[in-house]
Image 1: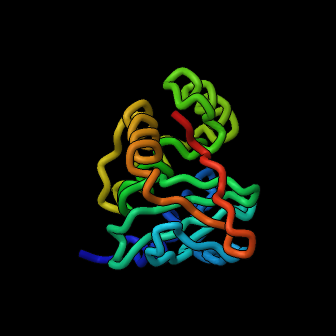
Image 2 (image 1 turned 45 degrees about the vertical axis):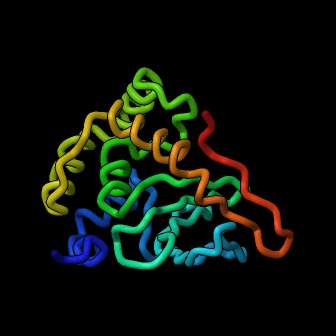
Image 3 (image 1 turned 180 degrees about the vertical axis):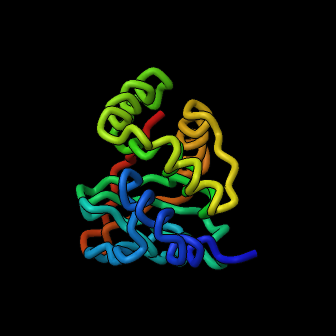
Length: 174
């Protein structure tokens, strides 16, 4: 199977959709602060967003590794188990960072705002998913999975600000 990172880099339309509205850029993998996982597992920044947040692969392996997102304000959360799951989240709910209650109703309100600014969002998303070979979940399912991963599995992926030794605040709480 071809690397999804390679597909994103090769497919201009996919990369553009992930850049906006997904706010996901493979050229922004440097977090800018020294961090590590409390467990001591490997941490590899591979993408970021426009506000200084970073996506990290955790542990050893390839694109199937768990992914922690750290924002630039000292918050972090496990957001996906593997790159396919992260890309599904970014395609279906690119506004996930603004979805504080993680409810379907809140997500639909945010979706309406995005659709107002980008009427072709669904068509572009569907083309990007097809180019990536990904089936997409419903919004509610994607948010429920994000919450499940962050809360149930995420406690094993605590990000530490290395110079001061303190943990990042959880972005997603139970």
